[in-house]
Length: 100
Image (tube, rainbow, N blue to C red):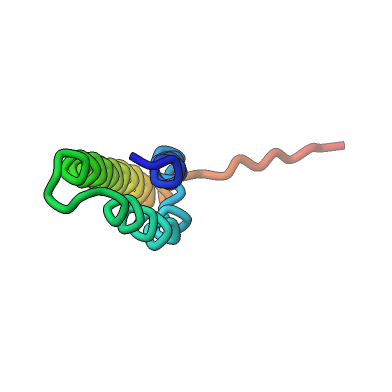
């Protein structure tokens, strides 16, 4: 892969790993431009083109899975928080009164 594509891939991977999905989404057009540029620099259908395509596909598949896992994890956390609402009515406030 070209250095520019590697750099774009690294930025995309870092954003997904950090859970920064908005910035990761914003990086996709840059990744696509670098991917297209890398493919333009090699013979079509050759081993280099297949390698570039395979590595890009692997990165995007990994990003998709990581995003889905994060979404599932966050949904479970949200569900756990929602369950806490059942206990809100049972909570008693302690009031201390001082005499004298």
